[in-house]
Each structure stands twice: as C-alpha cells, then as structure tokens.
Picture (cartoon, rainbow, N blue to C red):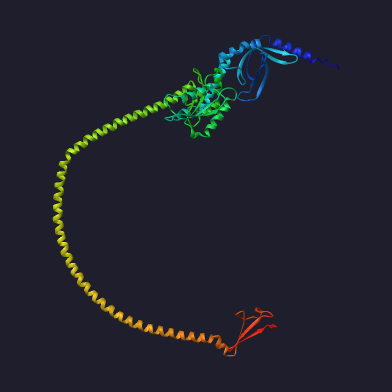
Length: 459
C-alpha cells in the first residue's frame, strides 16, 4: 500500500495559506500581556495570554510583535490616554494581522491598540478593589482613628532620593514657628513592580516600634501619572486601611485619587501640603492654648474682682459682727461662771464627805492589815531561824565528811600501809608500755625513795 506524504515545508505553506484565507483582514483581539520586552532597535515583543476566569491557569497563548515604526506612535498615545505604559498583567484590545511563518510559527502583528478598553478594565479593577475593601469593612477604618492634637513624631514612607521627601523634611525643619518635629524615614520603592512589597514591608517595620509615632505619611512628590497605578493595589490599600495609627498621603497628584489615597486617614496633594497640614495643626493647637490662657486670665480676674468686692463688704461688717459676737460670748461666759461656781461648791462638799469616809476606812483597814502582817512576820522569823540552823548543821556535816574522804585519799596514808609509787619523768607509771629498757625510774616509799634502771619488762 502506497502512502502519500507531504513535506513539513509544504504543510506549513498550506497552513499559512489557510490562515491567510481564514483571516484575510486585521482583527481585534482581547488578551492579557504575559510578558513584554522592548528591543534596542525599537521593536516591542509581547507574549499575549488568556486565563481561566478567576484563576491563574493559562488556557491560550500567542506571541505578538509591534514593529518600531508602529510602536513609536502607539506607546506615547496609549500612555497619554490611560496614564500608564504597557506592562505585564495589563489587559488590552489590539488590532492585528495574523501571521504564520514557516520557521517561527503563529504570531500577531499589532497595528493598533484601543486605550479605551484598557481604561475600562483598569477602572473595573479599581471598582472591584474598592468594593472588596468596603465589603470587608476596612475601607474607612483608618479614617475613624482620632488624630493627636499635636503631631510631632512622624514615620515617613518614601524613597530617600525622592525630591518630595527632601521638600517635606525641609519644610518641617524650617517652619517659621520653630516647632520641633521628629521624622524617621522607612525607605521604600515609590514606583515599579516592587512598590507593593516594599511599602508593606515599611508598614511592618513601623508597626514594630508603633509607640514611637503619632502618624504615618506616604510621600512621593511628582512623577508620571502612570505611576499612580501602583497605588491602586488591594494589599497595599488593605494594610493602609487597617494600620492602627493615622496614615497621611501626599503622592503628588492634583487631580486623581489612588485607592491608597481613598482609604488613608487624610489625603493631601503633595508632600509640602502634608507638612503644611501638620504645622498648621500645631499652630491651631497653640492658638487654642493661647485663647484658653487668655480666657483663664479673664475669668481669674473676674473672680478676683468679685471676691475683692465681697471681702470689702465683709470688712465693713466685721466691727458689728465682732461686737455682737463679744456680747453673746460675754453672756455665755457669765452663765458658765455661775454654773461653774455652783458645781465646784457641790463637788467640794461631796468630795470632803468622800475623803472623810475614805480616811476612816483606810485607817481601819491599815490597822487590821498591820496586825495581821505582824503576826505573819513573827511566824516567818521563827521559821527562818529554825531553817537556818538546820542548813548550817547540814553544811558542817558535809564538810566533815569531805575532810575524811580527802584524808583517806592522801598518798601518804596509802604509803603508810606499805604501798609504794613508781614515777618516770614526774608521772606515775600505770602501764609498762609507758617505759622502755634503760629508763631510770623512781620508787617513792613512806620514808625515802629508790632509783632503778629497767633491765627487763614482763607482763
């Protein structure tokens, strides 16, 4: 059986002709930019993708090219209308011809881009983020935090090299009122793909030392309108809305509000405007203090005036009041004096009778007590005399007994019985182990002593 086959080049040529026949004219295609690269020669190369709805799975993909002569016109036109440059993740509607090359396969040759589609999609994304934040109940959370009366400690999220940051610091430090304001920079990217992660990281670093700050301010200053899109970010807005101290924004756009601006406590146009707000709030507080001080001074003066008037009136009434009081007190003293004398006399009479009765009773009890105690003393003296005599006799008997015992223990008494005492080095010998061969020992008798030399020892 013969098999008829064609070459690969013939197959690709047929595909090219078939595609050309099926799509003879340019078509509009909706896709998402998966990857974008600008070549040095001015060409733009795209990977266009389509994802499953509400998923990250890619279900279609194709390469596209915008040649340099077309890209030079499309790029500024698209950015002027949308405020953004073409970038990964952006949805676009392109007008393109379908190309099929025998070596490079299928691709789209982009002729035009409809910016209105992208604007609508971006607005849809913004509205979706706002709706989600609102449904989650966090959209107005930061706005509900009360502002301190005086803002003096500020955590600044910005780029250290940003002109807006320098203007902000200079405006605060050189304020005409001499207010002292402390700022600490938490550096972050203010544009580009790392904007979200770096600003969220700055929020986390601030949270670690939250008690050191009154507010957080995100300042940027100037920049392209397209860079505003980096602040239309759900997670960035989510962190900003839920931050526990007020967040101010001054990212340098006069007309449009980003979502971060919307959820922040206070949105101001520029970094300098943020600085002016802080200074004016301090000035307002100082004015309130001055007004309160003035009111307090006026109130104090009025009170002193009223009190002085009342005091003067009281001074005028003092002589009359003193005379009335003295007369009243004099009558009370006379009454008390009469009553006192009467009570004293009654008390003296009653006490004289009590003293006489007490004296008689005391005399009787004293005589009775003396008589009884005299008898007791007599008995005690007799008893003490008898006990003393017996005690002395007992002591004499004990002394006699001790004397006899001592006499019996006298060595001379023992020697008189025919015993002797052997001594070596003035110490009585009680054990033959205490002396050695050749030692000279002394034997004491009742009459005289003997010296001996040890020749042998036996037990």
